[in-house]
Amino acid sequence: MELRPASVDDIGELATLVVGDPAQASTVAAMRLFAIDRVDDALELNRVMISSTESWRSTTVADLDGAVGGMVQVGDASMAFTPEVVDLAHRLDGPDFQAVLGPRLTAQARVQASYPSGCLRVSEITSVPSTAATGSGLR
Image (tube, rainbow, N blue to C red; front, top):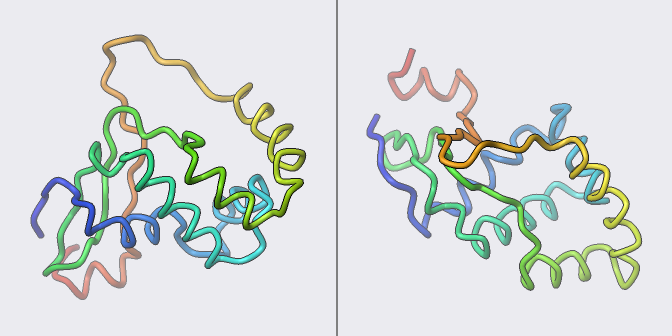
């Protein structure tokens, strides 16, 4: 295993790590929050968010023989609504996507913590399932 800065070539694997198992509670909740029915759409939304916000730049990956086996994001890894994200949301949810997302994002913003300036914030830690990791020599 080697730790290295993420690159633009890792975006697809990072999106897959963030989405995780489609049946896990956090994935189900996030898909409901964004009114997404298909896992492929959730993956595409994450790829666009990671790419357009350039949050991959604050990401370190665990490289397992050429494959991303885990990631850590330190600093701002915001899920900002860039023009690319808004365009994708429009394509996924149709012309009424703002009516669907607006109230949900307002509710989400109310429960997000604020952080003191200058603090070191780990915003995401994700790894492949342990069965995949043990096959790569991790224990």
